Amino acid sequence: MIYFDNSATSLVKPESVYAAVLDAMKTFGGSGRGAHNAAMNAARCIFEAREEISLFFNGYGANNTVFTQNATEALNIAIFGTVKKGSHVITTENEHNSVLRPLFYLEDKGDITLSVVNGNKNGVIDPKDVEKEINDKTSLVVCNHVSNVTGNKIDIFSVGEICKKHSVPFIVDASQSAGVFHIDMRKNNISVLCFTGHKSLLGPQGTGGLCVKDGFYIDPFKQGGSGVQSFKRTQPENMPERLEAGTLNGHGIAGLLAGIRYIKNYGIGNIFEKEKHIAKMFYDGVKDFKNVKIYGDFSSWDRGAVVGINIGDIDSAVISDILNTEFDICTRAGAHCAPLVHKHFNTENQGIVRFSFSHFNTEYEIKKAIDAIYELNELYEKGEI
Ligand SMILES: Cc1ncc(COP(=O)(O)O)c(C=O)c1O
Image (cartoon, rainbow, N blue to C red):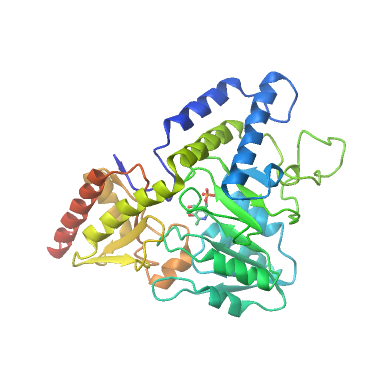
C-alpha cells in the first residue's frame, strides 16, 4: 500500500511511538489519580510530555500545555472559552470545520459577528486583509497555519504582529504544520496554539492539545474529575486542570511524546526538506499532464506537502477510488471538511483529490503515483473514465 493521506492522519509512525504506547499500556495507572507507582508512571510521562511540547513550540511551560483528544476539541475549547458575547471575530476561508463550525454556531446564535477573509486566486491569505477587518469590537483572530486542502501557508508572523498592534488575541490551528515547521508562540504572538497529535507530530489518534499564553484566560469547557480540589463545586481555576476533566489518554500521550522526541532527533528542518522534495517531485511529475488541474499556490515551496488535483471534470471520488482499487494508492477525495476552500475553487461538486505526503514516503512511491495519474489522464482523453 502507498499511503498519501498524511493530512488526515499519518499512518507510518516511528518504531519508538509503537513501543512507547505498548509500554504505557502495560505500566500506566491513572495520572493524577493516586500516588502509587503505576499512577506516578503515568503522571511523570504526562508531565514530561507537557514540558517537551511547551519547549517544542516555545510555549509557556508545562502548566500551560493542555491535552485534548484532537485539534477539534482544542479549537472548541479555545474558541468557546475565549469569545466574548457581542464581539467580532475574524477568520479565513481556508479554515477547517473545526474552526468554522464553532464560529458559525456562535454567529447563528447571535453571539458574535464574523468576518471571513478571502484569499487571492490561488487561495493565499494576505495578512493586510486580516488587518482591514479589525474593528473596535474585534475580540479574536483564528486561522490555520497551513491549509489541509491546498497546503498554502499563511504568514502567521505578520498576522501575529497585527494582533499585537491591535491587542487582539490570536488562535492558531497548527494541525497541518506542527511537526514540519518551527512554530514559536512567543515570536508569532500566539495566544493559543491548537495542535493535533496524530498527523505530523507522529503520535497516536486520540491525542492533541493547546498551548496557552501565560495569563491568557480560557473558560473551562468541560467539568468533571481533575484529581485535585475534589471538594470544590466547580472546576479548579489552576492550569492545566481548568481545561482538562476526566482521565487523560496517558497511553496516547506517551506515544505523542515519543513522536515529538523522534522529530527533535531527526531534525524538523530535515523532515521539512524531505517532504518538500517528495511533494515537489510529484507536482513536477503531474503538472503538465493535459487534463490535470492543481489547486493552491506553488510559486514557493515554503508550504505544506500537499498537492490537490483533479483530472478533467471527473468526480474526485471516482479518481480516488480507482487509485485505491487499481493502484493501491491511498488519497482523500471530496471536501476535506473545508467547505469555503471548495467554494473558492469552485470544486464544491467535484471535490479535490488530495495527495498529502510524509517524510516516510519514498521516490519510488512518487514514481508509481505519477505513472498512475498518467494512465488516468490517458483514459480520460479516450473517454474511458
Ligand atoms: C487544518 C485542520 N484543522 C483541524 C483539523 C482537525 O483535526 P482533528 O481531526 O485531529 O481534530 C484538521 C484535520 O484534518 C485540519 O486539517
